[in-house]
Length: 451
Image 1 (cartoon, helix red, strand yellow):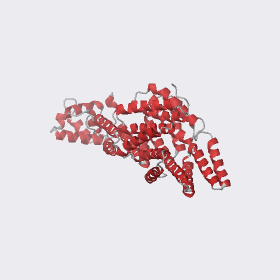
Image 2 (tube, rainbow, N blue to C red):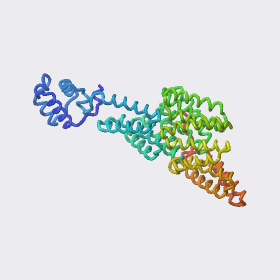
Image 3 (tube, rainbow, N blue to C red):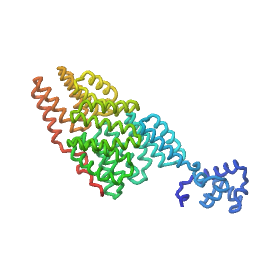
Image 4 (cartoon, helix red, strand yellow):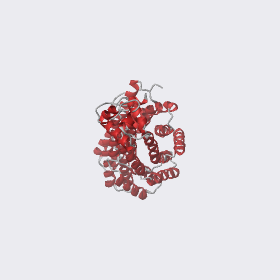
């Protein structure tokens, strides 16, 4: 039955392959044909003028000493199994933070999968290359790999396409295109829930991935709802890495609600899973989140320690985009500890590394903090310039939650320098962003999964 599912080559290609293998083995057409077939049938087959049945191919494969699949498709025996094992090795390499080495492994596997028409393995290699590109900070290349993986899987059921769709959404999110990222995640969630394709892994991946964009857009209610659904799905999910990612994402909503102990508990669970799985980059992200948690709680020394640990781990592995984002958080802690000059140097380095196209929200955060540092140093002109740059980046990204706070900072600065009308305009803009409904482009939030 399995043989009938193999997508065969055309008769001419199969005929040439049979002829080559027969000659390599020193067999005549009669020796190959007997006892079930005639030399004339083998001659016609080798000329590509007949489409051999499965039974005929099985007979010829046995006489030639090759597997049915190899004769029908040209793929060496156990090729797909070998490629899948090497894909697992590449995934393990990426997990340890060696993104450049993993990219080389995935590229070689992609070429092999394309040569032999291994569709599922080709899609997996493209997904791996997308993850490598994201970790190295190349969002455009990452997005292109995810798009190619989607096209490769266009005939597959939606749950199989979810990792590629999620990867594309995250690439838009990191580039500052928050609304479009939410649109991709929400439409996929709605399609999964409406169609009855209850795949806990796919649903959990999507709900957990939506939390970050929701939080940055100021849609805290929707983020909390996504976290609630993710936590409810977790017991049905077998992949520990996926569960760990969920715990890390859920911690953001708990922090926003002031539930620090619960957030710390979720981060501890995620970190322990990542340690067991030896996933170094994600473990660094847990240190990052715990640093942010301690900073929110005023424990600045502990916060600095956690953030420096995260920065060291990410810098060692050349995770440029993520390390720049951690550096912004660390600079905030350094400024609050009275080391503003050190913080400013770190922020200028960050702006040299990411820029508006690679992490608009974190570029804005860097400008915002540089504005505060400049204002503390009584350089109001530089402070205003940084605030305005940050405002432009956040407006383009649609990060409503941060925009309201930034408008307040800019309004306060303008008021102190005597520009009352301009200050009022800034405050009104901030109020407009604060009162804007916390929704995305679609209106209603995604439906609850059938738990």
